[in-house]
Length: 198
Image 1 (spheres, rainbow, N blue to C red):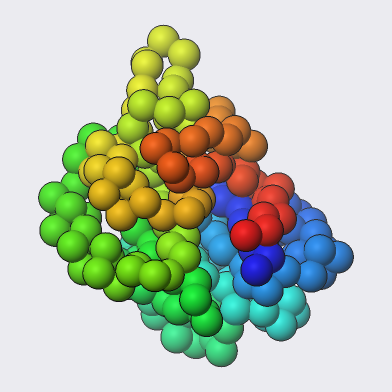
Image 2: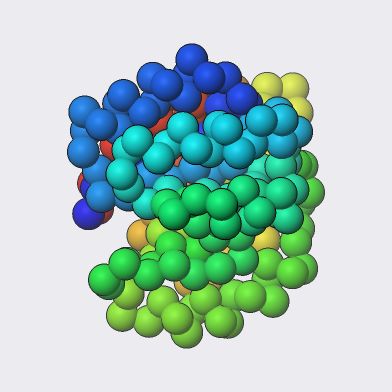
């Protein structure tokens, strides 16, 4: 399966137009946005609608610049966009689980409560985890002079459920960085996006 993933475009239409061109050239099976498509939900519906021309499903989560309710409402007005925050989406043997929102919170009890459900659903499946925040203590959450700013609950989920891949964003300083956490490959595809083959 080929995924095209991006994050943190913050309402920049020129950047989004370039992403769409890259999607059309790379011909993925699915598109993934790890949050912050907008700046505080401004123009959310119009920005989301721009992706209709890709003719592909767009799995998206809210970042810290969208609310879950506004994103859900916007997705419902399309035939291609699906908000996967706290939800599992399946394509063949691939499972996508999303968890968005958040800024610099170190723990999320709500997410930890979902771990047993995700673990059971992911048995004998290939799990792709989409989060806005990066997991704690990796190359993707380290900020100079501030140390590690990631989320320990995401790290716990990765340790227990062992997804194949974690796509995340939020910290712009770490866009395009990659790392490995336990057996999971993690990456921040940045605002320009990346084609990923699994």
